[in-house]
Image 1 (cartoon, one colour):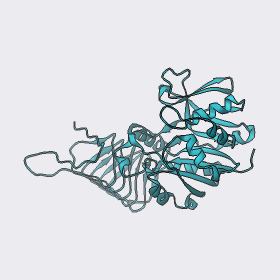
Image 2 (tube, helix red, strand yellow):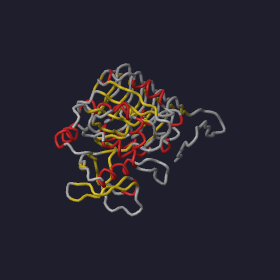
Image 3 (cartoon, one colour):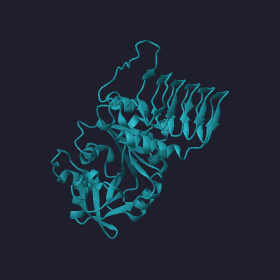
Image 4 (cartoon, one colour):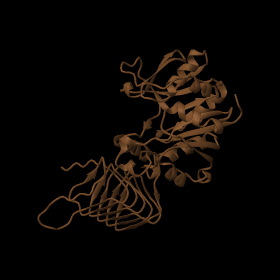
Length: 357
């Protein structure tokens, strides 16, 4: 095993299933509990003792660069690696060949969340020294994932989104590799969807007699590719937050675990946790219910919100029904006017979804 272990984080995907939010923003920067999804992965690598991290970027690269900077704020050294087009995970590995050199590395998909981090898994990889280690979890819908078939503690077969899955063990978006994966990625051909699949590259290692070890993850894992997944990840993270009160409370009551960040004002309102109220947010004459993340600069007046994520500078005012199970993009305003006749007025981006009840 090479002594140095690097990190490779994939942050190039377009995020089509999170539209309209991702028309203007990278999916890996959508916040969960007011922190970009991507940062959870970067922190997990850092906590496992990895300092050198390459981040694969695509069309949203400028935004990712701006958010992450040189990585020093997160305790890592970051190298940005542009990928010409999203041509598959194995193609991303080849794109990073110069950065990776002969070193072993952990590949982490930037929109994945693992509750328990990866430190024990990295330790196991270092000590058992396989050619590759994959993380697996039992799922109810394996046909939506890469699926692994095991024989004891060895992986014997991998298949990408099989129509008839041979097991219910899905590949979690974290992989550990030696440099042998580079040769494997060069040896395979594109799949029917035109991508160099990482499952094919790992299968190539298996077929060459290399040792690929599985590790079944028992804590929760979330791929935050869809709105429901974002809300679920938000719920899971908020479930384990510790309360913080750095903002201002005026004639309000807070119940349960709530984080109120600096500059936030809560006036004549009720907040029931778990919830996060971001920097400089204003909550006035309102109710914020469990599993809500209110981002920086939001204003909520005379409204009720529950089980929702509000991105920066959302303005919600004078609503007579509760906003729930919603993901609301930056700078959105939702308000009621007294104009007659009563009517709904919308200015909506592509792929918006509105439910009126």
